[in-house]
Amino acid sequence: MEHEFLPKIDVSIDEKTGVIRAAYLRIRTGTVAETREIADGRAFADYDDGGWLLGIELLAACEVDVFDRLAAQEPEPIKRFLRGSPPRELIVV
Image (cartoon, rainbow, N blue to C red; front, side, top):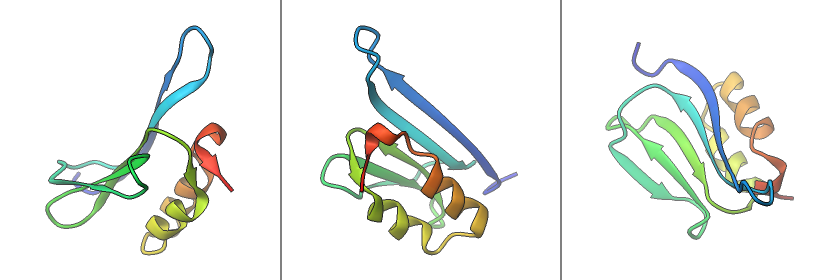
């Protein structure tokens, strides 16, 4: 089903240090039509051709307000996922 909320987190970890290098938070199923930079090369959001948020790629630590802005227009389950799921190493409060 298109746009179904199917949360999943994929994490890339440095095998020598155990440090998280990147994470991808999948929010919905769908085909990516556009990727937008949302935090100065540190985070990118994927959208389908209808503007639905599909996922977020974290390449470095981001401020928590980045997730709050993305969550603002989303239903409550997605808000909770976006606010509570990113690895701590990739969040700056």
